[in-house]
Length: 135
Image 1: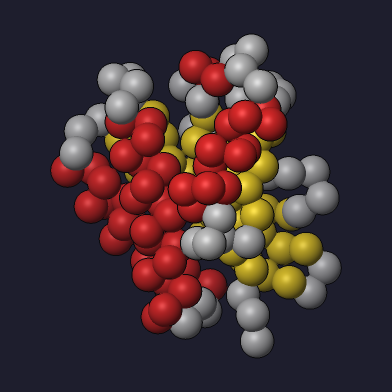
Image 2: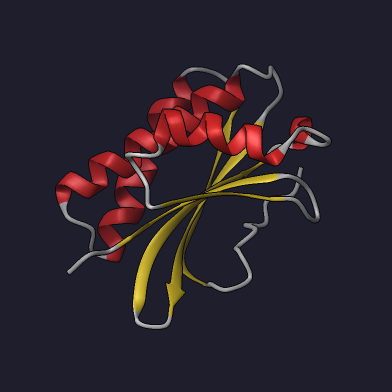
């Protein structure tokens, strides 16, 4: 599995760039803490740091159920003057699954926690969630 973040083409990736390997339930706590740290480095409020940590932990719990190790990627993104945090993971097990069905399921579970959820199809299916900093 690649450790590269797959940023939607319209956004530029920027530091921090952090990775957490998810292999067992203890790693969910590490994902939560690492996400809080990344969000803090980008200037998110404490409330938004908690939201992002919850979204990342939920994603980690989801991929843990596959029984395969996954890497949760955390990185800053930039869209013009907007800064945000992107949380992503490759999901090869979603190859051939309807992107629309995946997005409906993810948005019903995490839609209130992040601003955007997309499924990047190439080079490998990758779930990408983004929250933008609001002034």
